Structures are given as structure tokens and as C-alpha cells.
Length: 378
Image 1 (cartoon, rainbow, N blue to C red):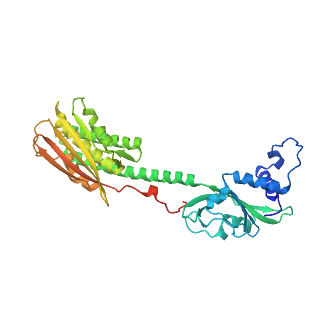
Image 2: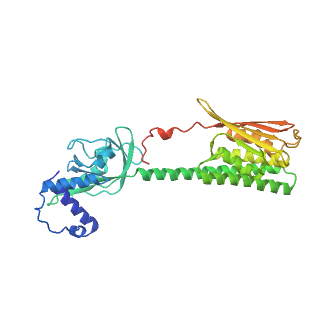
Image 3: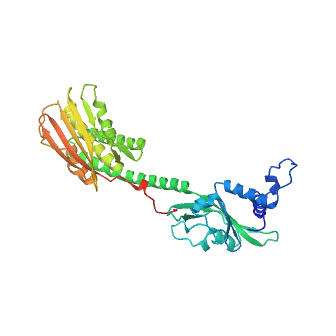
């Protein structure tokens, strides 16, 4: 550090240069006081107290790059407090470039500013702290000169951009999820059209069934839009069955814990529930007054997997016999669900009502929220 008070005067000069006006034009003068003006050491102490109050990391080096001062925000960003006059260019334990590669200290923004004797603005990098955590930043180093114009050091401000990086990553994930959902939706629509065409006997039947199935798909996507990247299995059931609940006792009974499903699982199971509801409305328990549907589900958690098991039980409806012709709903349970989400369904055509037992593998719960992540400033 140069003579006491130098940082203060140089900071004042830099403010004037930045604002293209005399420094005094950017300072509110205080009224004259009877107290004697503070000496240089006191002014330096007050200026350091001001820098320590700043939320941005600020530090200085001499002309050789040795760290001569840093404020509390810089120590917090670095994760350590290096001894003054011993560490070169920056107090970071390690640094990374924007592509995640190691950044040598002598190639850091501060080193560039001093070696080339020029200000550097907005270069991006990251500090890898001793504890392994990572802080991305933008650097703004500026060379410092004495009254004769000789280089005496530099001052640098590191702006923590962790929040901005998190927002950028969330946006990137949302775009990727959007592409994924659109691709899956188009594939699902194509499969629905093909299967509906094969099972329909007339154009009118094809039209009616296709509109209903696309409508079910749209309702599931609306749930995903309202609730975020996951949707509750119970909400999928309510989405289809609430319209058939006439208020009579036991007409619709839904029993089970809260289960959040990803978009892929929600779309596939939403289509399956729609087909079960449609068949029940046409031929089963929902086709007559007094018919009842009970759906119960549970989650099984094992060491390496989670499983959703649900039972669809119809009762008090017309007498049931196994159909001679299997339509879209049967193909959905027999082929589509196993192929798309590795689910297994069995159908029991009991006289008193159809019963479906379905087992759906679920991904293990993501534990990354509580674990440290690798440092990646990108």
C-alpha cells in the first residue's frame, strides 16, 4: 500500500474519471466544522471501514501483484483470509475460467490489468474455496498510479454472480424440458391417432374418440403447467373422475398418499386413467346409477427403487364379461405403458366389476438438493 490516504484519493480520482467530471462534483460537501481535519491515517482507517461495509469484494495489490488490502466481502468470497504481502494477484485459493478449467493466478484479470497497465472490465471467472464450494464472479480491476503517473498497484472489485448463474441454469433447464415435452407430446399424439384409427369402425367414432383423448392429454398438460414440473397422481384421478361424482355415497372413492409424478409418468398415466374412466362410463360402473369406483394406491420404497402400486376397482355396475374385441384401452395397458414407463397392468374381468392392478416403477428421490455440487461457473 502507498502512503496513508492514497487509496482514498485514488478512489476519488477513479470516480471522477468514470463519471467524466471533477471529483468534487460527485461529493456532497459538509459544512465547516470547528474540529480539526483528520490526519491521513485516520482518513485511511475511515476509508477501509467504508470498504468493509460494501457488499462487493474489493482488494488491492502493489505493482508486483502482492495483495496489500482486502475487505470483509472479499474474504467471504475467497473463503479465507490470506496474509497481506504474501499472496499474488488474488486471494482466491484456486480460480476457474468460464469453461470450468483451472485459471492460473498470473493469468487472472488482476494480473492482466497490472501487466498490461489497463483497466479490465467484466471478465468472468470463479473462485474455488478451500472447502470445495464455488463462487462465480465478474472482475473489474483498475491500475493505480501515483502523482507522476507511475504504476503503483491496482484495485479490483469482484461481483458475485451466483444468483444470475442459478437463474441462467433454471432457464436452460426449462428450455430443455420444453423441448423434451413437445417431442414426447407429438409422439404421444401420433400414437393416439394410429391406435384410435385401428380401433374405430367409423369416421365419426374416430373423431369422437380422438377429440376425447387429445382433451385428456391437454388436461394433464394443464396440470403440469399449473403445478410445475411434477403433478400429483391424485390430481390426475380427480381430473378424470370428478365429473362423474354425482354426490351419492361411495360413487367415487380415492385413497392414497401424495405422489408426485414427472411429466413423462403423468402423461402416460393420465392417458391410462382417461381410458379406464371412458370404459367405465360406456360399459362399466359409471354407465348406470349406483355404480361405484374405488381407486387406492400406495408407495413401496426399497433400497434401490420406489414403486407406485394402484388398484382400480369397479362395483355395483352391470354384470361384466371379458370383451371379445380389445380396443385402444387394452392396447394402452398391454403395450404402451410397459413400453413408455415400464409399468405392468393386469385386468380381472370379474362379474361384479372390472378390477385393474398396476405397478409403476418410480425414480429414486433426488438427493442432490442436500449434497455439494461440483464447481461449474458456466
